[in-house]
Length: 216
Image 1 (spheres, rainbow, N blue to C red):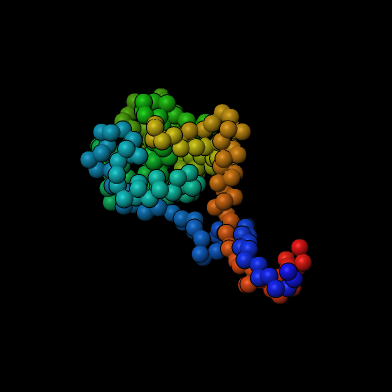
Image 2 (image 1 turned 90 degrees about the vertical axis):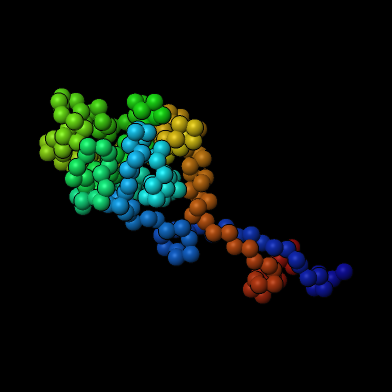
């Protein structure tokens, strides 16, 4: 039978990589979270913000590790929040909320083990301070500034982001000691998220390409 009389019915799957930011039809990166509306009221006794169910926290958890650089970018914000981040905490700023969320997201369920190296955690903030948490935090900021906290987090994120993964059981982010174990998986996920799958039939291909396929 002549190949000219055979109508190919092959479907071609083309994987075309492209930056997500440049496509309006793909997942867009979140600019920032409405931290001034963050509401942790009635849940502070649980210890970590991820153990609560507020709408803002729901957005952050839904974004996974993509939320981390966004929260880091908000560490220097000073807008007053509508609600307080913790009991007996007054005059909360959105940068305070960003810090509390980031530290909690890397804190184990034992409420003590902290998983992101190279950043100031609560023990570092409280060291040598005889005040309550907010007083020590404000004293830390007076000495070092919000920018230093942000820079520390950004350095740590850039160094460890390929090894950061979510531990569903402990409900926190961890930094894997084995880059090969989690690095390949993160790279694969990133590649898939940056690709669009286009399925086209032979009939929609250009005439020259259809002719080439028929000659194979």
